[in-house]
Amino acid sequence: MSVMEETRIPATISAVEINLGMPMDRRTDMELKQARVAALLQEAGCEALLVQTPENFAWLTAGGTARGILDPAAMPVLFFTPESRWLVGSNVDSQRLFDEELDGLGFQLKEWPWHLGRAGLLADLCQGRNVATDAAFGSCKLIDVPMQQMRRTLTDYEIACYRTLGQTLSHALEATGRTLSVGETEREIAGQISHRLMHRGVHPVMVAVTADGRGRAYRQPAFTSTPITRNCVMTACARKYGLCARASRSISIGQPDANFRRDHDCACKISATYVAGSWPDSVPRQILLTGQRIYQLTGVEHEFYLAPQGHVTGHAPVESNLVLSDESLLQARWAITWCVAVGASVSCDTFLISDEGPRAITAAENWPLKRIRIQGAEFVRPDVLIR
Figure 1 (cartoon, rainbow, N blue to C red):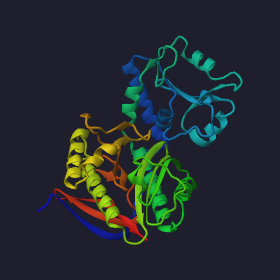
Figure 2 (cartoon, rainbow, N blue to C red):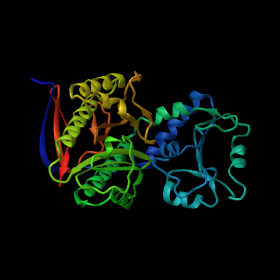
Figure 3 (cartoon, rainbow, N blue to C red):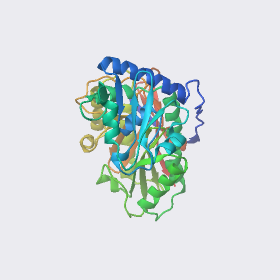
């Protein structure tokens, strides 16, 4: 009996129960993070924390985003002590940020007049204090690495948010794939994906569309004016609630040609192998070596070296790349994206690592599926939609 077997199954509608009304709501999530900040400050030997990066702003506000501000020097920041938290913002933006992003989360306000700028107020806040920060500022102690490591572990609230984001991203890709027309260009399809995301309050971080095998030449493409006549691969990374997810879906106009089918089947086998290894305490190096072996068995070993295979994701699109030299351990409650490109095809989705095994965040909603059995366990990957 082979280690890996595969079958194709017809499209089904997957009903995913999403409930953001969990006991740990957003305010409770904020209180948990306030306690984490207090512990982090104690460990760093500091009395306050200055938060400047967008990823940590989103993490420590349970999904807040400083939208609509063009000047990096005018971006709001956060200021924490073990017991209290402040938004530090311009008088132009502070009211809107409270109304749209921070209402009811227990933040106080420190405000600078727009014509005086941010630097003076931040200097006053840090004067005479032992302050930690996530980006270089004056004599503050830099603790960006511990903060990045801490934010990777998702709370219950964030996991619920992630499931909703994943469902929205899958819907945007699949609805576009089911309705696209022959002759539409890559950029028109990218626009449809972006519209469906933004219509639901999701920000498209990256959208890539490749028509008629153009992905063979470009493993990290965008989109062009190339029209679709035979097949199309859509990939998108999207952000909402301060979290990022990524997924791909493939479409063929009529039965796929032999090359496209082979590429897609190989990509699915390899991505399923990566997913199968995504458990707590797994070592990325070992997962990648196993996947590399499947590349060899399917006769496409050179493809491994043409593009990154995956990354830990979360509040940043890429928290850390997964590479052969990485012998750290994956942890429960991390989000991980596997993105396998073979020839013209891509097999990409985002998963939650859990003690019960990997759980798809961007699970297919209404799409043909492909079941792949690996050492007795079954894994599902999105197949090619034939139009």
